[in-house]
Picture 1 (tube, rainbow, N blue to C red):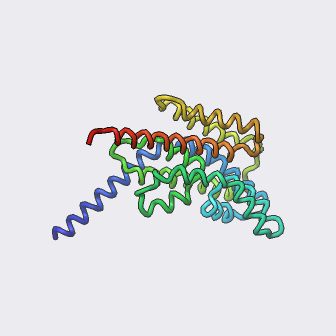
Picture 2 (cartoon, rainbow, N blue to C red):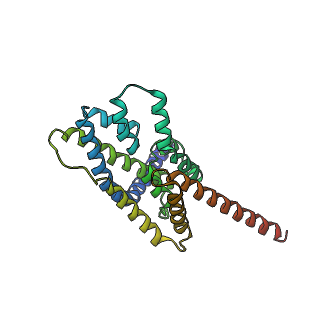
Picture 3 (cartoon, one colour):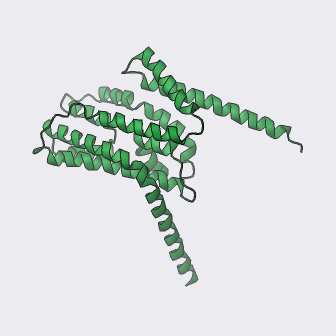
Length: 253
């Protein structure tokens, strides 16, 4: 009887923890909801216009979950099957996720089974939130990141499926719609800027992006920028760890 009661209390505690994490995560995803809904809708309509049923954008958004890659996959599906070419294109488009994964190694530690979904569901927007958001005190970080990732994918899948379903009845010019994502990232950046005590991290990102943009051009600057930021942050972290070890050694035993 006592054991059964303890199990019930444990389950209630777990549900309370999950509920609190959901309510903490949801406000962070509201800007993503707007961007993903419109872009997902455009993607679903584009798939319908290319001759595919709504099942295709639904399944592709569930399994691929990579916006730019999904758009390009439409043209790949319409041409001769070329697995090697498809793999190279996918690798080039999604190579930035290598740096996302490295940056999130410490944050994903201790998240248990949720880590597998956090890795699969990591997109630009989820990474931006999970990496920079200050999780409220008393909120489980693992569940917070899980719900951020899950909600963002729900927004994208819903938009894509809705676009595929409404494609036959919706006809409008989609030109310029991708600016929604640019505006969304500006909002995330400004929110992060306002929360920073000092702005060296944001300034480093802006500076690295500007220099790499001038050198590599608008089509190829993203990965070099991430590499520069990653190397700088890694070097800074090692320097701080070395200073901390030296301070510990200088303390009297």
